[in-house]
Amino acid sequence: MTFEEQNYSQCFAAEEKQAHDSQAFQFESNKHLDATAEELIRSTSHIKRFVERWQADPNFQEQMALNPSKTVSHYGLNIDPEEIEPLWDRGDGEKLDEAASVSESVKRWEEALKFDPVQSVKAVMTIVKDPRYHAWRERQIARTASQFLPSFQGQIAHAPVCFELSKGCSGGCWFCGISAPRLDDIFYYTPENAKLWRNVLEVMKEMLGPVAGAGFCYWATDPMDNPDYEKYCSDFHDILGIFPQTTTALPLRNVERTRSFLKLSQEKGCLLNRFSIISLKMLDQVHEAFSADELAFVKLVLQNKESKIPKANAGRARKRQQGKDENGLPEQGTIACVTGFLFNMVERSVKLISPCNADERWPLGYIVYDEGTFSNADDLKVLLERMISNQMPLSIQPSDVIRFRRDLQYESLPDGFRLSTRIKKFNFRNDLYFKELGEVIQQGDKTVEALVSLFESFGVSSARTFDTLNLMFERGILDNEPEPKSMK
Ligand code: SF4
Image (cartoon, rainbow, N blue to C red):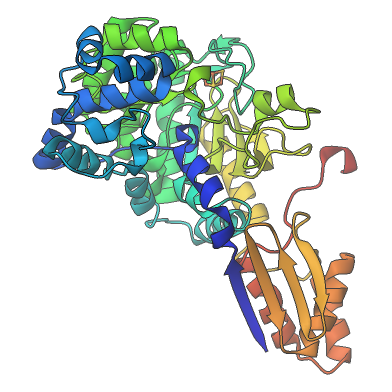
């Protein structure tokens, strides 16, 4: 008897590139660089600025083709266009990301690009304190591995926790992948709120251990909407040992505040933050307001329409495009990067979430497994413990109804069965036991207990059936979505 997993990797080169290019999918956090790496990144800040302008602005590309020296001078770029020629297209078919490394500048730039903060988050995530959370997160990652293209999957940090410090967002972006509502309320740093905040962080540290530091303090909110955001981040650093990464679409609201924040962030060891660039005008203003050196460690996420970076097919972008045959959005639909706890500190609420492709059931691109509210740290501990014990068993339970995930295509084979998505297939073959088991699970109406007993009557030991079901459980094949609320 055999079980194997296969990727359809060869089919997806073009789509993988698209997902890889879509910086909206990325999550970044602390990374302590050595002096050489820091110097490397700083020394390429004008190349970084050139690349941002190139990717965001077709007009700039045209100007470069006509008069490179005049163009770089006009945009205040301290670079020699000849030296970085492989990074730009003069119309002879060369593309930016296919450029050959020829000059020292280009080589340094390519070295700087290897700095990958997602890996540092993943490294932190290996030290998970609670084995139930650890196993649950691994199962969610196993599930998403057959739902997202490998390169896309690789960009999702599956961070353990995030905190909304406002209710809603003033950004109002038409494409918001998590459909942030309008800004409605703010979690101000009052003595009472500060105490609650620090207590909540202590609870997360106690329950999750060091991995709680891989969290961050925004979701369907913009950090700069909260005038006390810096204080919350400083507490986060104080208690969890990491200064959280920040993404904001509002860096221009108060340039001096943003500048001070970047300084604080760097002083505390968080070297990489992100600005979402909503329009070309905003890019002009950001490049005007901040020097290339100041933005050496700030990734610009180019969301302006000219940049042609596809929006995630989730939230408002998905809703706006629904019903159109060719909606121009990639099939991969989420910007969610948390497999863990989503807090809203205004509401004092927590949701247990994990990314998925947005659909009718989960239009925001994440599954909500559980949710609840708390009023203080003691309440919160009880709530989290309930979520962990209800949602994160270490193995299948006798009363579980066993079904395959609804996105898996079931296929009966002469010697077993196959489950497929367009990314991956799972083969259970070379044993008629698999064939029978697949048929029964596909019916989707039996508990573990009933299924084990049925197979015992066929002469299959309960241990064997349990083992097979647990294998499916660990590989994220079995349906564990919560029932829709209306069905409860
Ligand atoms: S994309 Fe970000 S800034 Fe824009 S509305 Fe959504 S949460 Fe706010």
